[in-house]
Image 1 (spheres, helix red, strand yellow):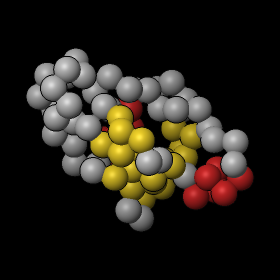
Image 2: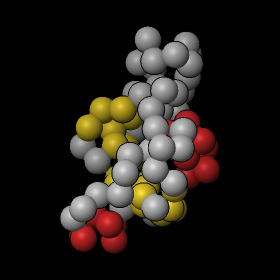
Image 3: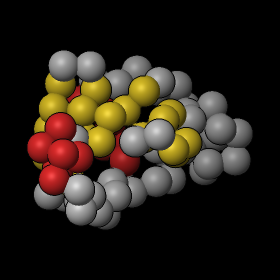
Amino acid sequence: MTVLTYGTKKKDFKPGSPMSTAMKQLGVPVKYSCQKGDCATCQITLAGRYCKPCVAKVPPEPKLKSLQEKGLEIRV
């Protein structure tokens, strides 16, 4: 399971599941426009990398123990 964090919220998600579903469950306020990944309106930062949750999947669990415990941070 991959741990995602947003602010003080932390939750486990199955790798490969839709990122848009994970964002909703964490309460991340993401704006959507095209829902296909073309416009980048929904772009967020996940563990320091840009990501479009409308088309992205939850990444696999990181190998670093510190990231496994803290979780991958999401920033809007």
